[in-house]
Length: 311
Image (cartoon, rainbow, N blue to C red):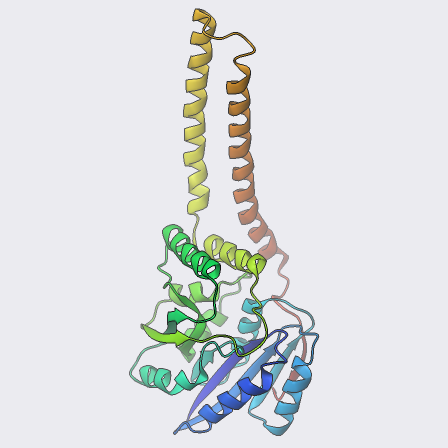
């Protein structure tokens, strides 16, 4: 019999725990020819999330829990869940029910037809602000413009993948994972599953602007070296501008076009421009160097406090 593993990261989700489990359990128990396991990863929640999950796991041994010692982030939580799966096919889904669990049977049919990565592509996104939609659109345009790998637009981590794909992802030791990018990078037979994304069942988004920017940086830096190459272009432009300023200064001195006071503006513009280019260059370099430093420390991506129903 085939086995479906479901990985669900949880961070301050006490308001949706029971509804999420109820809807998932209703779907998976009606699947013909499939066993199932549900792996909840508690990402350092300090509310009642873990307590509620433990009550569920006590009554259902197919429910497994990985609980972190502190908050390590959404991508780390998904990574930890993928390390524990035992199924032939794996679903990644968030707890907020914006991605309906009722779509699982349709996604499984696509997997049975030979597709190995079935990623959710949002046709619409209910309950999201215009600012969120705009920034998401700009993020994917920027990412695909810089990345060497085509990453589908309007997607998240909601996807159904074959076990061999997960094994490939698990073999990658890198930190600061951008999973939706990695699932595109590994290849295999991919299928865009279009669906209507719903509003959150309850609670608030766990991806404020600060975390979205961190995710965007992980995506761009993890899949492109073009920002580093752009620094070379900035350097050439800066040198070209400096030569223009030099020629202008010499001509101005020879023909007395300006006095010293009038030249103050162009001098300040030149200084601030080059200072800005240098600081931008240092910032881009520091992002890449920071990732290298993070990798060389060889710290684990996360620290597990406890596991429940996992041998």
